[in-house]
Length: 397
Image 1 (cartoon, helix red, strand yellow):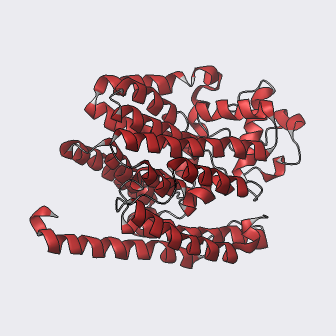
Image 2 (cartoon, rainbow, N blue to C red):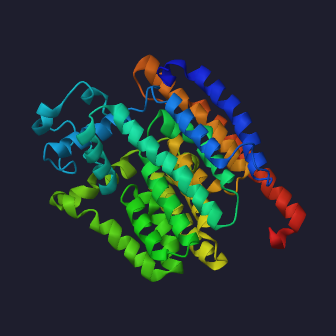
Image 3 (spheres, one colour):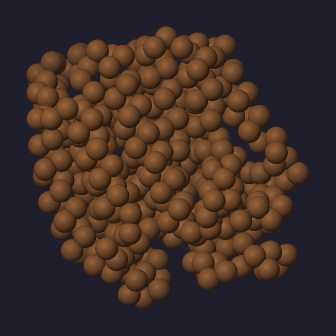
């Protein structure tokens, strides 16, 4: 019930033990076997687990969320003022010292800012923010189940997402805002399955206005239903209107973060020493464009495309945090692979950086963690690819 960083090794062991049970659950729900109990009882279990994690110390990102909500309540545009701006000194409280990157103006997009504002109006507590974001996480589980029903599949498969230890940690413990984006994307998946592309367009537009990485979903919509794709982009653009006083400052922190920061990336760590940081980023962007063209040619369904696109994005990004895997797992849970299950398990070792910070005050990832996290994933991918080639022949692999 305290800070996982203070007991990181114990937390990692508990997480990995939980992964064993989780893998068994995934096997059950994907073998057309319905777990004992009605769907609503399992959903109540999802709620109970998250309620039990409510008091665990969340991520320091919540201090930033609370700050930006309070800044808006005071009548300021968070895209104009960084937390260390002297103009905002009167708003500082005991949580201000915990804000990360205090020299950065707001990096989170407008829909996230609206949620921060609404929550701050109710309560300034970071646990209130966590409760709101956990609610959106539960909404994601519900919408996934409705999406599965539309696809004539068992709604119990949604628990391959809702009971994932990584998802429970990312939102039930840490309280990251990505749950807003994932709820919108799950709603878009349901809308597409219900043959409501314009509803999906609005939801994807809102997802983009939470985190721009959701532009990948817009890419699929544009190449399959271009009118809906244009509506999606228009909705995302319209959300910026209340903050236009910031001008180009709307994207200043996002640009700084993407060009100045580098942390735990897979491709970036491999390629940068050989070809340089910027060329590695350009190659990564090229791979994403190739993937979009390939997905269009194969006419991938939305869920399959989204899982593979987010998977590639996570692998080529220069900054990768533990909870980013939830983007992939949103739809990978519907078609789980051993490789992504493996990475979902090994990613818990990222808490070693939290352990170092708790002990020394410095955020630093031990070098061995990168190998411990990614090497098992690569091995599984190679073995699985080799097996498929052997089974189907090189022409069908």
